[in-house]
Every structure is written in structure tokens, then in C-alpha cells.
Length: 366
Figure 1: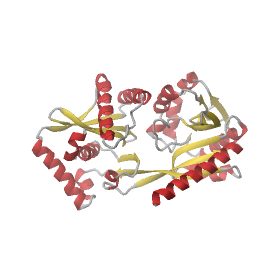
Figure 2: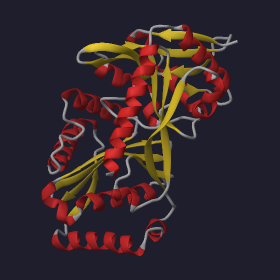
Figure 3: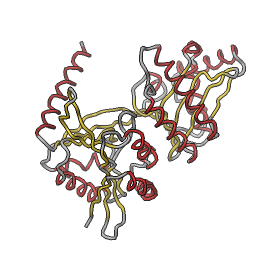
């Protein structure tokens, strides 16, 4: 028989580190966004007005077989709290893909039953929002059966494109359309002709990480300013989080922060994470003055080449349907958001939320 423990203090969360990552390796959902480092650093930076609600699942011998990495937040309308809701650690104001409950392989069903039963015996929440769960997840597949007559909804939330990497660079380029291959070759040839001295640079020294991250923030902001957008690093708390996580990941050999350097100047950057022999593209930036030279696309292709040379199995673009992704691959994974109701207020909220999104979608089609 399984038992549940609830983690409510940061000190308890801190002590979970080793057991957390060992369990992650035993699960089918082993992704970088579910590592203890990512989740704990997120909590350190964004815990204001939230409460930890991490559930750990144990066998009779106290062996850890499951973790539900959750916190309690509040939904406010006009400054008034209308809902207390559970959500994954690691979500807004940052973004994380491929989230899930962390459960030891072959224990998914019994552990999920234990977690759901515990949640419905705990009345301190109105709504549980489980975001960005892969459609292929065992939890997603088992949830309908486990929930029974309890109310929940599942909605498609994100599409994540990816490239299965071959062993040779030539094989990657041969997989592209002729038009795309010619574009890649032409852009690199033109850049080399105009500026013979350009190179791919990777931040490798811990002493360089702060300056490298500041360059990332600046180049990212410059790119988005051209579209009248602040970008994803506009808040100081978000910059603080990424500086911390970049430092931790660099120490663990999980950070790959790339720059395209032309005649000594960094004109584009790619912020990526290496995990389980995959490279995840998290964010990017480029100097608008160099956009005509196609430095953003050139850097992506150089990074893919570097990943192939290093023997990585996959290049994961993460969320988004941007053209520069679909021109390089048609492989994709879908993710869902799951909404579990536990009060009348949550059902009313979801009713209006669904209505709002339907109206918004219909207007976009006009």
C-alpha cells in the first residue's frame, strides 16, 4: 500500500534533491524541466504569495516512487481572490515544457490513484491546472480511468517541434528541401564573403556566465523591440532565475550558451540546455542591425551541426510553431493542459474561460 507525504517547507524541498533526481531517472518523463535544480531554483525566485504543495509517494518500506511537483497559487479578478489553484512548479512567469508527475516506471497507475485520492481528500484548493503535459505521458493516458466521475478537462496547449539528429551533417541537410538547403548555403557564403572572420562561440567558464547571460538578455530584447514586444527577460526576477539556473547547469554540464561572433562582435545568441543526449532550444536573441545577413538562422544551423558532431540524438525546439522551425522539420509532439475541478467556483471559472477562448478563436478566423 502506498502512502503520501506533503512537502510544505523550502527546507524539506531542499533535502529532496538526491532522491528527486534518482526517481526522475527511473521515470518515463525524464526531462530537464523536471529536474530538482530547475524546480527548486524556480521556487527560490518566484515563491511570493504561493505555498508549496509537493506530494511524495512512498511504498511501505518508505521507498520513494512518485512526486507531484505542485504549489498553491491564487487566481485574482479585480484584486479579489476567486480561486485557490494547484499548478506545477516551474511554470509562469517562466515557461517549461514536457511537465508531468514524476513516477517510477511501472508504478504509474497505483501512484496516480494515490495522488488523485489525496488531492480530493484535501479541500484547500478549487482548481488543479496541470500544464504542458505530453500527449504521450502515462499520466495523460491513465487519468480518465483514474478520475472516474470526478470532473476534469483536457485541452491541447502546445506543439513542440524537434529534429531527430543523424550521425552526419550531410544527412541533416539532405533531409531539407532544395530551396532550404540553398538558402542555408547562400546565407553562410554571403556572411563569410562580407565578414571572413566569424565563429561559433560557447560559454564554458563559470567566471564568464554573468556577462554571457547579460549579452543574451540584451540581444533577446533587441530582437523583440523591433516587434514592439518587451521579450521574455523583461523582469528582473526572471533574469535572476535564468542567471542562477545557467550557473547551476553550467556546473553540471547541462548548459550550452552559443554566440555567433562576427569580427569580434556577438551578433546572435542561442540559449540551450543539454540533457539525456538532447539539445533543447530555450531562447534566442540577435542584433537587428545584422538581421539582413540572416545571423539568427545561420546560428541555428551552426548549433545543429555542433550537436550532430557531438553525437546528440535530438534537437528539441520546444513550444511554438514559428516558421524557422517548420522549415527545418515536420516532427512534432503535442502537449495538453489538464484542468481538475474541486469546487463550484472552479466550474464557473472554467465555463467562462472556455467561452472566452472560443470567442477569441472565432475573431481570429474573421
